[in-house]
Image (cartoon, rainbow, N blue to C red):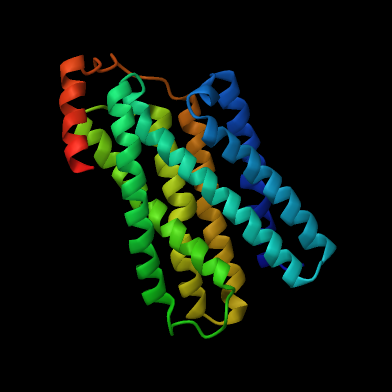
Length: 248
C-alpha cells in the first residue's frame, strides 16, 4: 500500500471514529434531547462506515457494494431532512401556533427546493459525464443539493426571527454544510481529472468531512456566552405566524 492509500485510509477511518466522540459529548451535555435526529445521524454514519469498511475489505462484487452504498445514502438523506427540521424549529420550540405554520411552510419550501435542485443537477450532469453512473446517485445528489439550499434558509430564518442561533445549532449547520455541500460537485470534478487522481479527490472530500466532525466536537463543548436573548412575546409570535400563514 503506497502513501496515498495510507492517507486515504486515515481520512476514511479517523472522522468516522470521531463521530462516536461527538455522540458521547452530546450525551454528557444532554444535547441529544434537543437534536435527536442529529444524534441518530452520528450513530448511523458510524454504523454505515463499519458496514462499508467490512464490505470493502471483503472485496465483494462492486454491484453489491453500490446497492448497499445507495441504501445507506438514502437513510442518511432522510436523517438530513430531520436535522434540518430540528434547526428550523429550534428558535420557536415554545410557539405552538408558529410551529404549526412553520411545518406547513417548510413542507412547501422543501418540495420547491427538491424540484429546483433536480433541474439544476439534471442540467449540470446531462451530457457532461464521460462514464455512466447509476440513476440512484443522480437522485441522491439532487436531494443533497436541495438540502444545501434549505441549510442556507436556516440562517435566513434565524435572522428573520431576530433570534441568535445556539452554539450547537450553529456548529451542526456549518458542519452539515461541509459534510454534504460538496457532494453534488465531486462527481463532476472527478469527470475532469484522470482516473489515477480519483483517490486524491476522495481524500479531499473526506478531509473536509474530517474538519466538519472536528467542528461538531468543538461546538458540543461551547456554552452560551452572555445572556440569552429574551423570547419573543405572544403578540410577536402571533404576528410572525400571520405573516407565515399569508406566505403559505
